[in-house]
Image 1 (cartoon, rainbow, N blue to C red):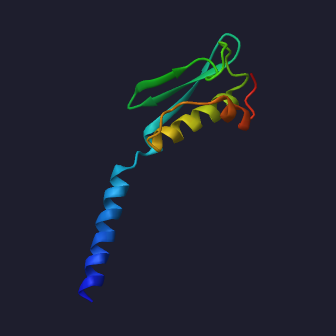
Image 2 (image 1 turned 180 degrees about the vertical axis):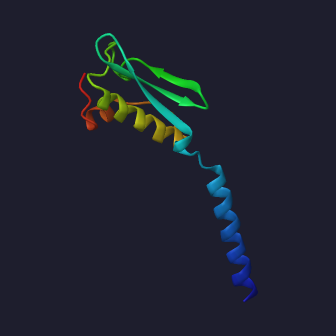
Length: 102
């Protein structure tokens, strides 16, 4: 019985630590920006711009997104990567999988 109580306490404390270490995506704000010929996005935390992305990332051209939905989908992906403590890089394969036009 004593072993079960200790194991239960260990699980409880581990859960609290894991929840406390996770980044919360709700801390980030996505702002879609209008460019001359399309759209871009900004990722903001505590009223500070962390990422300003006026063009589609990962491609070798400076092309804005065709519409605000494509910009928002890409920004959502970046925020989810930040939330997973991953680098906020976007690949061409990820753009293709989200049907981003470029």
